[in-house]
Image 1: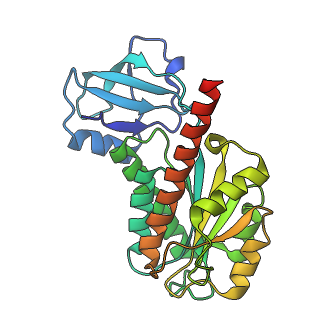
Image 2: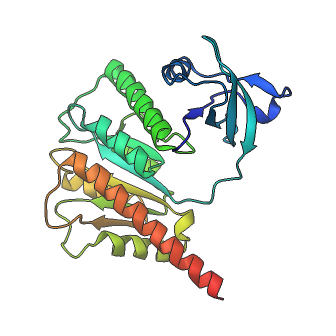
Length: 271
C-alpha cells in the first residue's frame, strides 16, 4: 500500500535540526491529514520545498501540525520525460477530469488553451477561480497517485501565447481530427526526437488537444509554425471527445517515450 503523500511549500527538511519536528502543512493538507486519522507510528511520504523526497514517521499528532521524524531519505528521481498537455478549454467538469486523470498518468504541465471554438468563456474573475480549482485538483491527484511532484497548471492562454511557450519544446504533437490517417503519433514522436537529437528520457513533448469544436485551420497553422519539431498526429479513425483525447494522447506519448528510453538503455548496456 502506498504511503499518504504531502507536499511542503516552504519547509526544507534537511534544515531541521531536531530529531522530531513539526510538518508545516498547508491548511488544506493539515485538514486532509486529520481526515486520514494518522496515528503515532504510521509513515507518510513528504516532498519538501527543495523537492527532496522523504519517508517520515508520525511521532505525535493532535489537532495541530503532525510531529514527525525522518525515517529515510530517498535518492534523486530517475530522469523522466516531460509531457505538457495543451488542452482546449472544455465545458462543464471536463477540464477537471482531464487534469485529474492526466496527473495520475504523469503529465508534468497543463496549459488550458483558449480556442476560437471553445464553448467556455472566462472573464478575469472566473479565470482566477478556475485556475485555482485546477491546481487543487492536480495536487489532490498527485497525492492520491504518489507523484513526486505536483504538475504545474498555467492560467488559460490564447493560441498566440501558448504557441510562444512551446518554442523550446523537444516536440509539439498537434492532435487534430483532420490530420492524415498516416500521421501516426508514435512515428511523429520518433521523427521529432531524431531531428532534435534528444534522448527520450530527456525530452519535453507538448501534446495539443482541441476543445469540443476542434481546432481551426488558423490555430493549427499557428501551432505548426511555433516549433521546428511540430507535427500533426492522429489518434485513430474515430473522432474522440476532447476529454477522452486529453487523457489518451498524453498516455500514448508517455508510453512511447518510456518504451524508447528502455530501448536506448538496453542498447547502451549491451555496448
